Image 1 (cartoon, one colour):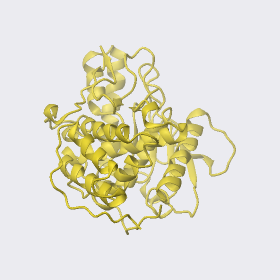
Image 2 (spheres, one colour):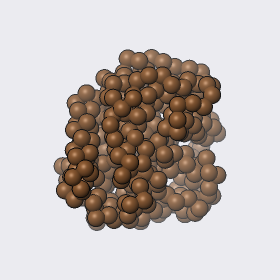
Image 3 (cartoon, helix red, strand yellow):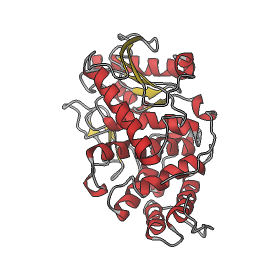
Length: 366
């Protein structure tokens, strides 16, 4: 299927670095952890806040104008420092070397690139062939991964509660998807627009994993960050799209705070206005839509969400806007009153968002 390509450039989306691990997880460790756990959590919080101040200047000039007609990956080693991009370890086409983190970053960024190329005919993050640069071994025992506006960065985890942050394919897909949002809808990273920013990354990250594993929607685990927790942590993943609020329940990091319905929407000024917390609501809306449609989630539900992100969402979009726009796009792609459009309405209704009359066209995208 061919899509109309719109010209786009990054705007407000690059104002904030997007982290996979919410700050409230480290704050709970500071409250409840052992002395060593508290120390490492404090270090992580300090580094994260420094990065927020630094924004995307780190490593920016190195990658901003690097493009290629084909997949081109560069994996760097920060050697536990905080300078980016670090020492080049593996370039595109080079043999496997540098250890498991290097090779996971290489392989999984390639999986993500292939997914967007083969399914959505997208040429890398910016749709113009942007190189995929990644840095591993960032900081000391750093519990996070992030997209800084120009490249991916991965910490090693503390080795006690968290594994290396390259371990989850969906995490890498999630963070690279933040780059796509940056170049398309440029969703503000605060409140409901920020929660949509996080949710679209969870959706696309999960779809990358399902695509690589060749899974139908009903066979997927719908977890984000499975494998990140060490065995001592009582939890399966960072988030569950199927059942928000059920991903973990641990004495140190607390209980997963995500709601899955608007009646439980969390009003807060922390976590950038709840971007990681309230993203559970649109996450579940997508899950319900995908399950209703069945089959490969990227073929219909994923197509609707991606086209909405690329062509329709604007930087201050609310959950209600996302509901109306995905419904409208479903009508454009598959026909007004189609099973696909009805599934979208059902998905949003399942999280407490009703779609009122929306003018749609039965015209398919050319």
